[in-house]
Amino acid sequence: MKMTFRWYGSGRDSITLKQIKQIPGMSGLMGVLDHKAAGEVWTEEEIRAYMDEVHEAGLECEVIESVNVHEDIKMGLPSRDRYIENYRITIRNLAKYGVKVIIYNFMPVFDWLRTDLARVIPEDGSNSLYFDEADLGDMGPMEIVRSTIENSNGFSLPGWEPERLAELETVLERYKTITPDDLRENYRYFLEGIIPVCEECGVVMACHPDDPAWPVFGLPRIAHSQEDYDKIVKLYDSPCNTLCLCTGSLGSDPDNDIPAMIRHFGQMKRIGAMHVRNVKHLGYHKFREAAHLSSAGDLDLYEIMKAVHDTCPDTYIRPDHGRMIWDEVGRPGYGLYDRALGAVYLSGLWEAIEKTSAR
Ligand code: DNO
Image 1 (cartoon, protein in one colour):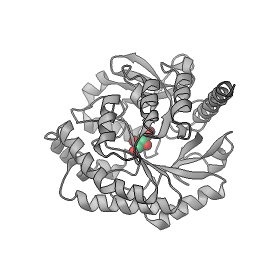
Image 2 (image 1 turned 45 degrees about the horizontal axis):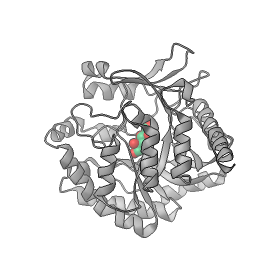
Image 3 (image 1 turned 30 degrees about the vertical axis):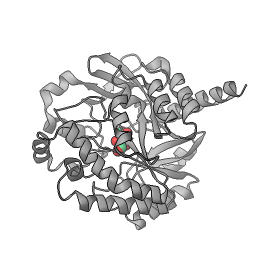
């Protein structure tokens, strides 16, 4: 297992590489070129500059996140071939700089979605990302986009890049005629275009789940349950077609048994990376993000780490979103303190599991 951290790049993150390096047990990053629009080529020069900086800080970067898939690919428009070609070039460029896993998603329009980015947790006065479908009912997509961007403390949020959302109304309209099966077929076409390139250059694609783990605004969503992922891995049968098992995204639906899902896909060798965090269920389609500790939420992090240890021990993990604690101001979900606590807690669980299983 390699413990990693998400970092957005100099000038785009409230956190420095030095701070990340000082978190015990941190091997490197799940990196991102935050300024890239979906469909654009990530050039060698841009990748090299990011990697040089990371390596100088004594960190690795074998995982890259959010190489976003252009909406035309998801919608199956004729222009998709151009964007798939760009994606292939990006995969090759990333491979040249040591990238082994690319985390992406195939969610129409929205990446993750929340109705409050800083909901105060009454027990301790910290705050975290929160979702209540009842609040969404009053809002509508345009309004949620506005409020999410306005409340992000001046930072861009992954998946909420302004240029991606510029044509929102047109795109939402187009999706009305696209069924989940259509979306899956478009997904197959995409995988047929890119997986052979991954096989050639030793890169694994890891599909991030829908977050929250159910359809929103009537948009088709096809990656939020074990059944969904069974279909996805069959769309293109290759060890390079894997999932990024995000415990908090999938765990927003109490019907998803996360340790069982890890064992299922881990045994199949189809887990390319893990995002690990806890979630507290508050009612129907209502939850908030919690501290990583099992007792702080509804997921059993010991069972989660045990399942990883037993079935995919070589995977990459990052502590996913954290709460905002100790008066930190930063990108919602991506502060330093709570994610650092999460990383060390998960490393502690790992050490205990390793030592007891070696006996
Ligand atoms: C949210 C992140 C996601 C993830 C993308 C990958 O905070 O986990 O934005 O990086 O879905 O494409």
